[in-house]
Amino acid sequence: MPSIIEDVFVPQFTQLNLSPTIGVQSIKKCGITYRPKTDKIKGYFWVLPIRNLCAITIADLQFSEEVKLRYAHPPFIAIGNYAPPLLEHFDVNTEVSYAAQCAKTENHLVGYIDKETYFNATMPSGGVFQCVSITMLPDYYEKFLPNYFSLTTSEIIKMIESIKEMSTLPEIEYLFAQICKANPSAQGGALYYESKILELISLIQMRHENASAFPDSEPLDEETIAMIHRVAKFIQKNCEQHITIETLSKIFYTNKNKLSYLFRMIYGVSIIDYFQKMRIEKAKNLLETTDLSIHEIANMVGYKNQGSFSERFKEETDLTPTEYKKILNL
Image 1: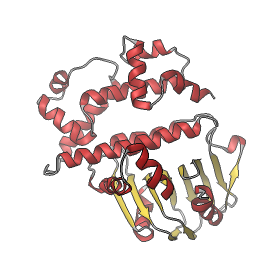
Image 2: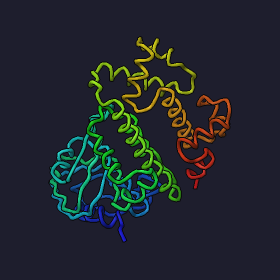
Image 3: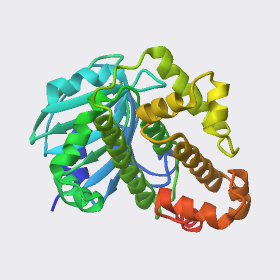
Image 4: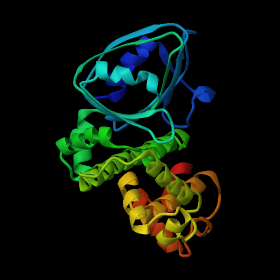
């Protein structure tokens, strides 16, 4: 029976001389934190297996001496936010890789697809390995995801291939930041992080579909992209307010129809939907970090009616606010 830890990560951890830790050396309440047993490497590698077929990983390793890696691995697909020094390894070691520049950092969103083969890499002295990623075995992306999204395996792979065509990826970058920041309980961790996997696939699907809807669009200039990012940042900071598209267009000195078109092109959702998504993200953060009641949180994120808030929350997360809070406190 496939096991993503044994099949994908143990060979890597063995060559890096990493071992599991407990207690204060763990970076999260759930998952397993691996740390080096040698002074040649510092940092950690955290992994949370899901269904034994998928895993969320966060790594931050620094190398004081050169380390050579060579290990066998099964077929897999991975999507992650990677620091740029390791980008070259994907072209050498994977059958197909797709990369796009992140909006807010020098990192890249990388999607790569590989068959059963060997991974070869040399980590140079002074080098770093920093990433947050999702790795899936065939039974996950060939069976579970197609059933969940009503897609074929080839359609899922085509979506991952579309990463290379994405000009900006702020909402996906934000999702990976959430993965790093969240610290759910041991009992609720797998459910929380699998919801992030499904959200990631959904975001990539929306970006892919949106790109298909504008096949002849001219590449956007940096000034236009920067303006749309400023609009998104404004929405993030003011999501609880009821601001119309017309008001936004006046604030940013542009035509409201053009603003709506460009925002959807870059972010893959309408401005109205983005407002709603940011309200739910703010609500999730309040549920995670405060003891406020659901009624109070609903009001703080711009909902006068708790029922409407709970309904929208479930649309975005597949959980009610009460269920979400319960997972965090398990």
